[in-house]
Image 1 (cartoon, rainbow, N blue to C red):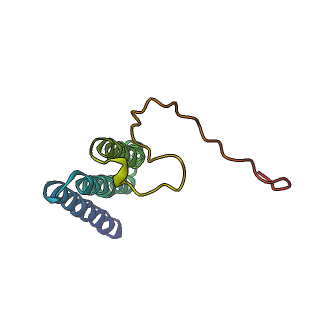
Image 2 (cartoon, rainbow, N blue to C red; image 1 turned 90 degrees about the vertical axis):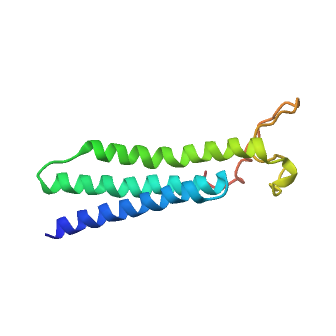
Image 3 (cartoon, rainbow, N blue to C red; image 1 turned 180 degrees about the vertical axis):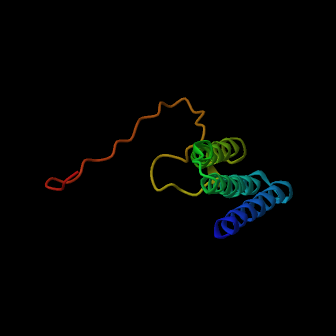
Length: 132
C-alpha cells in the first residue's frame, strides 16, 4: 500500500513538472527564459516518472536497469545541451558591450571572430610548502 502511494506520488509529481515545463516552453517570451522550462521539466518530470517506473519494477520483484540508465543519461545531458543552446544564442544575439565584465583580460566564452591568436591561460602554481 505504501509503495503504491509512493509510486503514485512520483507519477503525479512527474506529470505536474511535465505540464508546467510544456506550458513554460509555449508561453515564456524569449529563448533564454523558454530554455529553463523544458530543461527543468525533462530532468524533474521525466525523472519522477522513471523513478516511479523503477519503484514499480522493484515492488514486482525485478530491478529495472533501463530506467536507471535513462535517468542518469538525462541528468547528464540536459544541462550540457541547455548550456550549448545558451552559448549559441549569446554568440548570435549579444554583443561584448552587453555582457558584464569578467574581471580579467578574457571575454565571455562566445565565438571570437577576431584574427588575434588566443593564448591559453595557465593556473599559477601554489605557493611553496602548500600541498597540491
